[in-house]
Length: 488
Image (cartoon, rainbow, N blue to C red; front, side, top):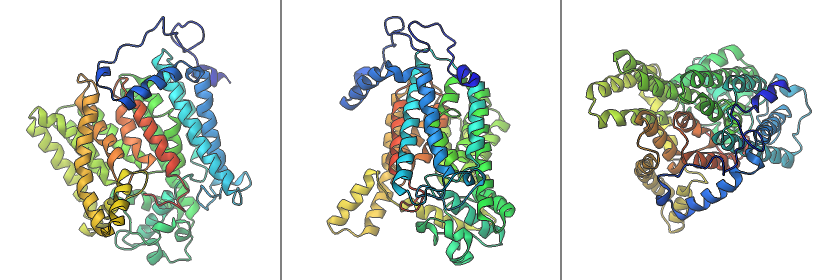
């Protein structure tokens, strides 16, 4: 109770109730881009203004909703196996009976946890914009405790960790996860193959070699026990998540905002930690590269940035957007030497990591770029083309050519929507990663991790509301335990 009281404590004076200053005493500053709002954004602005001054923005209400969402999510993992979890038992999932026969209840719990977490996040951000200044160190401490419990529960909402474990098992046995797959190498009766999502049993790894190294490490500890391997992966992921939170706390201009956006963000905790996704590692390398690029302009700073970008791409290839974002201000300022150093080091790091498996390891990675799924509008485009008799392969090729163009157009529009006095080293990576979430044909809620990490470094702006909405929409549409909907 004492910790909860401190978390919701207000460090500014307010009238009426803690954390909420009436509009008459603290008017909201006019938005310099207000005149450029479209009808949808004006509607959203009016709705948000009403909600922002409701009880939802009371710190105690917002924190309570966040904790409730996390609790429901943890209960779902604790009652594994069920329709929304992997069919494995981690230590804390042995304490409660399974909901294996309660498919509807399990699905309702998943959606309820996402909705409560979304409301809690929105409330906390509104309370912060109105003067609530919680102690970020206490937030970090509380989140560390929650993450510590969550990594001991069965992953929820995706089967990705099962695929990680299977690829790690293949690598630990001397196989090449880029030229074989769990079904072919481990066999249909392997405990590892049986927990992999149906869509991915015959799929070679679509992850980079640095990810494979981590998966190999976990499988080297778990050996034939898939639950132990998954547990090690969950623990490593949780450590990285909290490590990113600590980095943001120590290096951000506004540590409270940064902590609310990452460490105390209930939506991200559910997606990244409860789901056990590798995107946590990508975000860690990305925010590290951004912070180094902002603070160090010498040779060693550029080398570190290049290594971090190379490592991030060695986990998931979309991390190249971070490199492009950091390259933008260098191109604009014609800092050719710095750009060259970063590029050479990043490419060298990536090539070195791929050298063990050979160039054939790149093929599965780029093969995944042609996949399309709802709620991406490209899926509607693909179905429309097929309805007119265009072959699926042709539609996939057309989409793979069009969406990168759309990515840069949307990224430029997002970049223009953020004040020009903000550092381009932060705004450009955010614009590219957020645009990718909006226009990529294959995207999931956990892919938003890098955008959230980058946005922690940008003062209050309207992109926050859209990133929150998109993240929760993806979470509600594409969380299934990995058995009905394919994931990557």
